[in-house]
Length: 375
Ligand SMILES: *Cc1c(COP(=O)(O)O)cnc(C)c1O
Image (cartoon, rainbow, N blue to C red; front, side):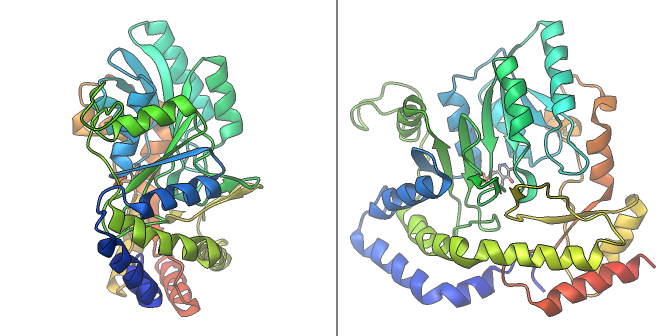
């Protein structure tokens, strides 16, 4: 069994994908070809924002966005303690200081209570200028933007929505990538919408940010690429990857997103009485980058994972180490007691195989194996 079955997806879409790649190569426009602008148009339309600017990967998308927002050395940027490293790494990459925020035990997303606490701490200390929050739509589920936006407005903070895992999710039909002042996503192959290499995209309604982002991704270009008006990056989505994404995006919106939600519902029906299954609040739709259960303690989690492995079922621990305990952030002073939920989650979470091509037999086998380990 595959954790995320990209081979079955390709088998289903191969004739269209092969054709699309062939056309892209035939055009000879390998960088910023027609497929790239077509994809940007379609993605912006789907998300419901004015601008989509594609780029090299989801990490570059974050760095480009922070630069466009003017985030710099001396600024504090708040970020969940429970996330993939890149969410916090990008903050340090632009010279600012990440301030870790604990998460909510039910949604795994940034906690409004902890955010308020950390903002007060930074203000009281007076060392850094509170500038922005990188929210993360973890495992496919949007953060609680009603609450977070209010706190940010009260404290004059920008929101950068890291929707690398969240693309396709929504709150009351408003889609992920439309909640931040700027939002980013990743097309890394295993993400909800993935390409066949690295890729990323940035979304915003703000014309000024969009202009800056289009400049920053091509060496800070001015009127053309040999007129350079600022320091940027070289970070573009390849035309061939855009060609792959045009086909995969149709499948994603036509049935894959529905199908992962069906898989999640079946898992929850089978497992919900015995283990803590993901909680999706009213009005929210997840794109199920991960289906993550929470076990009683570390020994039970490790036991379930071992039992799955014994039966040839892959599972993953996302994530086993909080940001505040990463070696790369060792010089950032923080209080381990502020991160009780993240610390507990790192010991107890387990992500099960999840993708749109899972069969009922797969779901039953995974669920029964989990249940048998709990007896
Ligand atoms: C994958 C991921 C990224 C980085 O995306 P890449 O395309 O791999 O650079 C950033 N943030 C989160 C939450 C991710 O899961």
